Amino acid sequence: MSNALILDGKSLARSIELSLKERVNAFNLRTGKTPLLATILVGSDPASATYVKMKGNACARVGMLSRKIELPDSTTTEELLSQIQELNEDPQVNGILLQHPVPKQINERLAFDAISLDKDVDGVTCLGFGRMAMGEQAYGSATPAGIMKILDHYNISLEGKHAVVVGRSPILGKPMALMLLNRNATVTICHSKTKDLPSIIKEADILVGAVGKPKFIQGNWIKQGAVVIDAGYHPGNVGDIDLEAAIPNCSAYTPVPGGVGPMTIASLICQTMESAEKSI
Ligand code: NAP
Image (cartoon, rainbow, N blue to C red):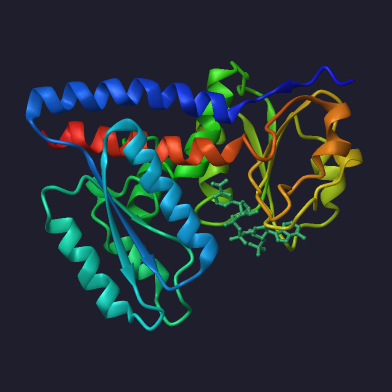
């Protein structure tokens, strides 16, 4: 039986939603308006469709509006850009979520960067990323922002700790590393060209797995007492870390499911609320 603390993202997300519900209500009474998140789904990937649906459902649970825009697989970059521009100009829209990934023919970076900074509640624009990195006000990328909320909620101290982030994607690994750095952790970023990954992971006080490969990080790579965050999610309810084998070494860990996933959505809707409040 392990004594490791379960970092319960599901129940934290639930309590965030409860307080958001009150905030939405108060905002509505004060302004006569309801915060609105626009979601754009391009193509027919079933996993992406499920993620978008979950985000819409979360909006409904807290009393926010969501507007679902579905575009066909054949959408061009220009068509997507013009859709984003329309949403940028619509005063009713407080946040824009473009579901990643988009079909191959689309220039995703161009599309992300077309989202205006004040509506970039998923933290995907280069400008938002740069501002976040410099410690200026910006909405953080939703998954790492959710992970930071979990670490803070459970009072996991970061200062002077060695944090190892495995993965450097623009939406997860990179912003995660900078958020941890901004909180005075000493950060190592690993990727597919990293040599001797197990020995680097063995040095981690805080480990974030964001590799995109099921159970890739092995239990015996984890240092005794490490805090383990598994951002991965794969069919069969497994993450990027072989959690079952890792738990005996951890002091705390995020379960899969019920760890990082619900907090990504909670961050997204919190940031939509903030955007609505700032728009007044
Ligand atoms: P991604 O874009 O595929 O990035 C994967 C990263 O892992 C890349 O930086 C890659 O390195 C690195 N990598 C691949 N093989 C490696 C290896 N052998 N050793 C070390 N690093 C390696 O994935 P992502 O979008 O960041 O997602 C990562 C995971 O998080 C996935 O499991 C995804 O399902 C999950 N996720 C969850 C949520 C959520 O809400 N819970 C949200 C987003 C993502 P290179 O840069 O060198 O290629």
